[in-house]
Length: 253
Image (cartoon, rainbow, N blue to C red; front, side):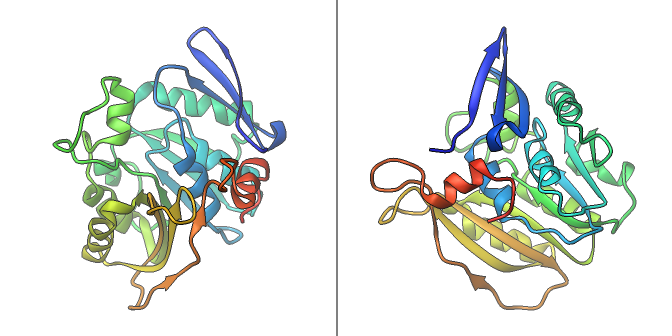
């Protein structure tokens, strides 16, 4: 079964994907990328010469995956507010030899007009904080709390920045909890980002969806396509063939 291969030294782990083609350093006890990032990266499609920005990049996993796919993007930028994660993302870019393609910036998603001019990106990718601060127990690890709860920004903040950054006709790819799908879709439309493609992600056939993958366009017209559902596990508990491909092959599924 295809999987993430991990080893560790001290407080860091060294993880590999795609049969060792992609290498990622992460903190053992800090924020670590998870399957939602793998799902989102597999959902993204790019055209040659496009400029891409990942909002809330963490250790840089999504830019790294997109960079390894070699689809001809002109530039991929990752933005991360947390200093330690920014440092790890920069290290990961260098480790994978992608410094000519990927640029990591430490910055606040709410204030990107200080960093970038308007309408300069073709694609925004984001795995934003999922949970409202008042909902549920906040993770005691600061890195994880900021990444998963709306501590430093909300989904509306992310989408307002997206609208600022995207060219007219540009697109955003986002993963969000299925239980908050209506919040996501409403916020997208409020930001004049029209949802065009949805795909529900389920743990197994017969179980409720846990995530929704969404593609939306700046200035797009009404009308949405719902793709067949994506299942993570087979009934025997192993990854489905589609998930195995996502973990073993850098190409888009």
